Amino acid sequence: MIEVFEESFPLARAFTISRGSRTAAQVLSVRICREGHAGRGECVPYARYGESLASVRAQIEGLPEGISRTELQEALPPGAARNAVDCALWDLEAKSAGMPVWRLAGLASPVPLVTAYTLSLDSAEAMEARAREEAHRPILKIKLGTPDDMPRLEAVRRGAPASTIIVDANEGWNVAIYADLAPHLQRLGVALVEQPLPAGEDAALSGLDRPVPVCADESCHDRASLDGMAGKYDMANVKLDKTGGLTEALALRAAARAAGFEVMVGCMVGSSLAMAPAHLVAQGAAMVDLDGPLLLAADRDPPMRFDAAGLHPAEAALWG
Image (tube, rainbow, N blue to C red; front, side, top):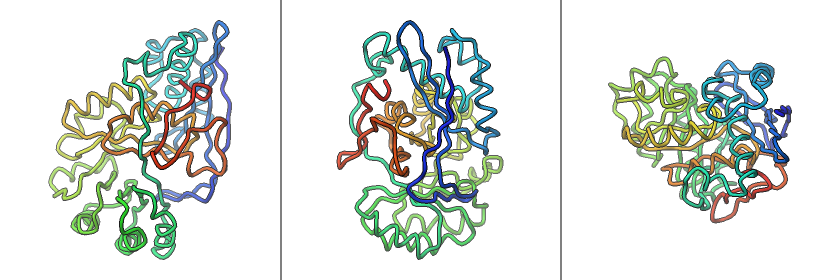
């Protein structure tokens, strides 16, 4: 039996990127029950990719009850629907076999990971104040993507002089803005910049200097994206809601590295149920951005544990 649930998790504070703001994480969770065992998965339908809660629910509800993980890869395209079902099937396999997903997948035992913490797009003054509040965190990710981002960059660096900073433009810049900001990114010690140009207009990156590594996010979905990234990007952002689940995420990670790309593992704003499988993909990644639960007012029970060592592997009661 495949069950689908719509859930809403209020955010601790409004979350703003160049495309808009939200005050809650709207997710779909899936539970698959077979032979006395149950597996769970979670996804975040994303309008940027033509998804909605209703459209993703319809995709999931249209699947045959006994579908396997292998059949699922052909039944649904990469995206949120396949992600929730794929992760639920992995969890179901683990519960049925009495062993963790990492062992089923032939992976090493997972360890805690230091994750970036995201600061929303805001005024320079507000972003500096938030950076000061979060300056104890080793990595801060700042949402930018406007023509007036230089003051914001300077402000965050003032607020958090010791933190590693990564920048996410969310497709909000054009070639001129990126070319103007690029040397300042380096001057301010930015470690990488995500998706500076729109995915459909990123060919220009192949002719531009990249003094700071550039990571493909909206331009990177699954293994089929890699050929189009060559010469334009230095890093691939692997997100399970884009790959369509853990199965393709692990394959994309391996293929990206084989093609010469560094790997970043990111997330949509979701609960610990969504972070648990991503945590396995993030083992050994050059950059980890799995802070979704830290942005929520309340998480699932049991939640994944965050402490000074980083984000710890999920308990079996949650997933995997």
